[in-house]
Structure formats: structure tokens, C-alpha cells
Image (cartoon, rainbow, N blue to C red; front, side, top):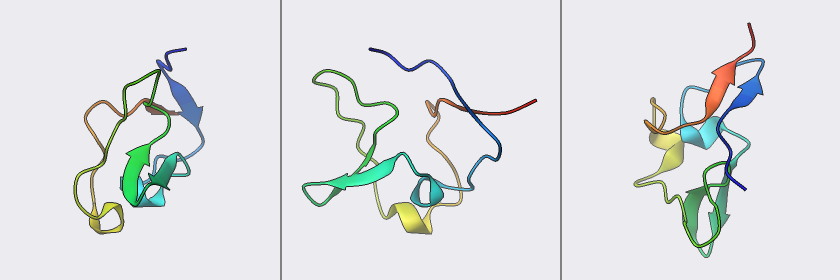
Length: 62
């Protein structure tokens, strides 16, 4: 399954504030982007981020 868009009521400022971010084996991952063998690792500390990944599938509800 591939997630193309996730419609949310509010876009988080960074990955650390997103409910799709989870730690897997002590590595922060974006679970909305993870598929099959692809693991969407988040580089750095996600709680210090004030931006989102360029491939983030979140879209604000119109």
C-alpha cells in the first residue's frame, strides 16, 4: 500500500509533532511514508525540526 495523501485538520510544524512519527529501533521514522521494505528515516532529532520532509503526504483540510 502506498499513501499518497493524508488529510489532516492542522499541519504540524515539524516531524516531532506529527502522530505518524515513531521510533523504530531507536531511529525516528515516518510511518505514513514507510512501505514494504522502504523505511522513511528522519535525519536528526525530529523534536528540534521546524520543517517537514519534502515528501510529507500531509495536506490540510480545505
